[in-house]
Image 1 (cartoon, rainbow, N blue to C red):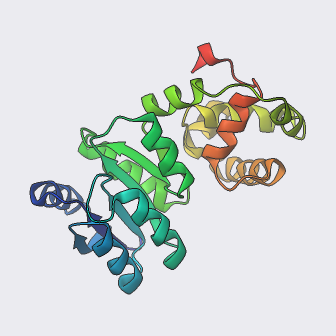
Image 2 (cartoon, rainbow, N blue to C red):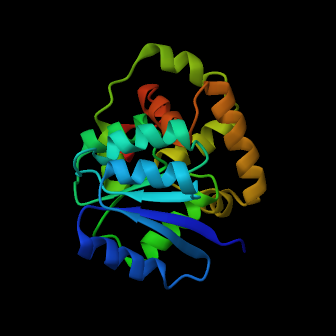
Length: 217
């Protein structure tokens, strides 16, 4: 497996060293840089073009959300995962809007962090499940979304429902007894039909359309 280059950005020295220690247990991850704030994170991503950056949110003089927006512009191939202590729906929503592929709380387990990094590097998105359910449950239904959802086949709707609960392609494949490759093709078609860029935006449309009842979140 190809070694992935990682940058860590956090304004606390102990937090950075702790995260680095966890990542060092994986032979497939290479820490190429560490930043103490958003400005340093942007500079490192511009210079090193890492495969992924772990970003804290509350940093000065530039916070993680501002840094993420800049990184998306200068290093669009760099995956962004927010790793924060802030259990905030508003922060989660903002992270999704600026192009983050993941949002995790710092109490995540070692295995949970490494698994999320693998998922994001594989081109998928993964967000803290409890926060994601709360955010989606807060979304009001909007009629236009119902019309868009009608473009999907029954199988695509079934897979879209799984996306709203944060299931990975492998998890969906197991549940539906199909291959992960088939799920990937379905997900790509779903995103194209809905006119969205990622799985999270597709899940939001599903909730808006009432495809998944809020008591199922």
